[in-house]
Length: 370
Image (cartoon, rainbow, N blue to C red; front, side, top):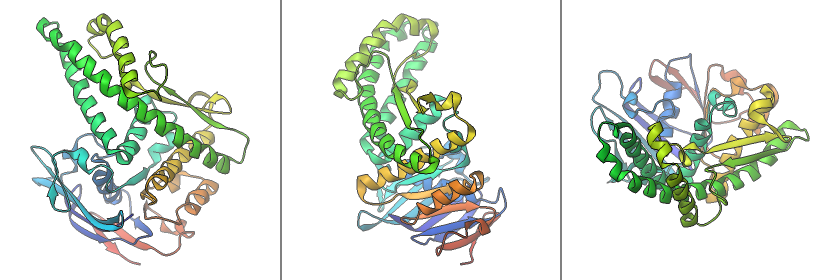
């Protein structure tokens, strides 16, 4: 899988940009705040239907413009494809695939697959549960489009349930619909939990081997998938898990009304990681935490390859400057296959990467030099 051409119009600080990319390594070099990361974010948007630096897609619109556009012509599944997203200042995002308008954004998930690795990911282990859920959801939404649809529907139901709980004090009649939303969330939540359980089991099998190769120590990486306490087996049938979630929701109905908040569900799930039997988050050194995060990201890339036989587009956003020489070498030695987009301020640090193309980025303009 590789992007042949990436086109941006009024996207972030780009008025117009048309990039011809190499199937191998593409390096975008420039000073800070010139637009290097914006290029990677456009690719991320076309892959996941989300901006990785902002929850609001309208933030992608260049100042003073009415809309932003990002388009990629790419090769995947043994054929040429094109995906285009138009973000208006008002209204819904418009997505087209091979010139055909899509009804839902989730219909575009998984066509152009990418894995993003940025400096913030190195602290993935230290952050809260939301960051690790986002890590899992981003990959799974590309691998399994039906998961993306389930997640979107669950998020919509969750938002409505929160409104009911918050407004019920002034409008008690809203509680008449509370159980309907809780039941539907439980049924969809059963699918979400099952997807996550199977994905994490496969991901961690790969991550353990990568972690051992990087650390060179006898420190086994392991995990615990933490979900709702009534779920006895996250690998069970989705209907069975959904029934257990519904039992938990019924038991906590009064507590949720009192707290005016949705207290449990897959929106609270977490991935707890251990190194040598100890919590990586609580007891891991900085080096251990970085090695753990690096292992997860590289395992994510391998998961995509195992699923489709194609490497996803790897997006490295100035991450090499945050790694020591040993970890830099490890990353660079694993990107011999597949397309890679790297941003950096000092291209001389990438002497281990042969071939490819070098682009200079300056104030929203891109110039190819090699």
